[in-house]
Image (cartoon, rainbow, N blue to C red; front, side):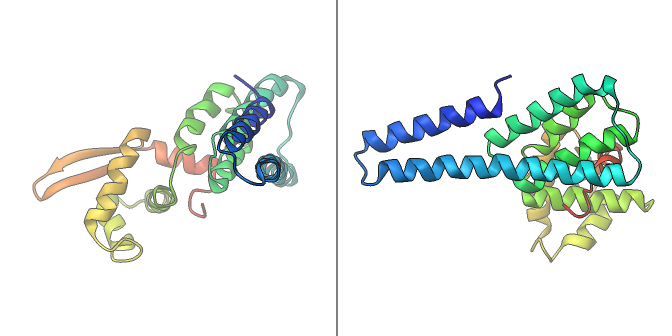
Length: 205
């Protein structure tokens, strides 16, 4: 896996070449701004992770010497997500998964990779739906789909169709499954939503 620094340098070089090829005025200045933006994203991600680690430490969560190998892989995977332009809210959730796995004695890179692949591409609406579904399931609600429609329609989703479109997109994560019902399609949220919500703060994402 390439490091985020290598990816960032490659992106900066490509952008500068493109700007020069287009003979745009101020290409060097624009290239420098791109480089600064990437550096700031990397710094912000480091600060997010540091905040989550400090919060976990305050709760009594401690990392040990035998955690180093998995931790390094997790950090590299996190910065790979940065280089792909992952939203900051998703990067925070991914950072929370690192500490959450340690808190629940599941600290292995494969476990982190599983949830990272889910979190990396979530849109704001998808975060909202998963967070609401987690809250409902955690409260013991049986018919999550009906409760979800009551909670999210007509605000922030104007219609059930809009909500259904988001749920259909979430099917790619494996956390949401479409099912046929007498009155049309329904969406079932499996226990993976609860597992993920136990590791990261889905409700406030």
